[in-house]
Image (cartoon, rainbow, N blue to C red):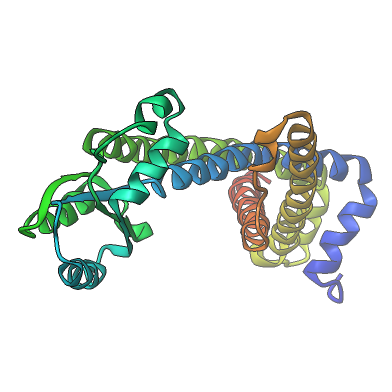
Length: 291
């Protein structure tokens, strides 16, 4: 007994009770699978929001007849703003050509124009961390201070709705994620408690020969960690299968979907291990007091 390490004891439990251990890993895997599916939905939703946020830009319309030197100097000044990623100057001719290409319903109206009604403009793209209503407003107010700028627009209402959507998604994601994690901890705790009950006599004998609670608890904690890792691997495999089936069953939208990255999968396994240890600590501590 003295020569058995906690790791060896934990592995022997899997050999002695393969069915119970398999059911435990499966239950943990399905619990983490629900968290994984939620995670996939969350990261793809966040990606969709990021794609929308890339469209956040400030457009400054320039007065006709503004000298080229003034345009060049202003472009450099705007680029130096801390919120600005890059600045593009769109001439009057480029604006008209774009309108003819993109506004099909007005193509005939734009074809025979004697005078180009569209103004030149600066299209100002913001850095990822500045794609919110407050940052866009700050940039718009500074650009509006240039004397040759006729008007500035950034879709204030649309950007504010995007901010609210991002904040709501973060709160909902945190609440649901914690709820799924709590359910997974309960399931893991139940499976570990079943194992402890099955080995109650062995624990009593170990107590009689002088084994400490720390020595007794060690194998169960390792068992919980191993089950958490195994369940995490099973959950990742099921998430990948579900993701592949869903992506192939959709059309063009499926190509835009993303799966967990390497770091995210590693964090998922760490999360499973932590949950396994947490369930073991709670269940073993309670059961050891009762034995």
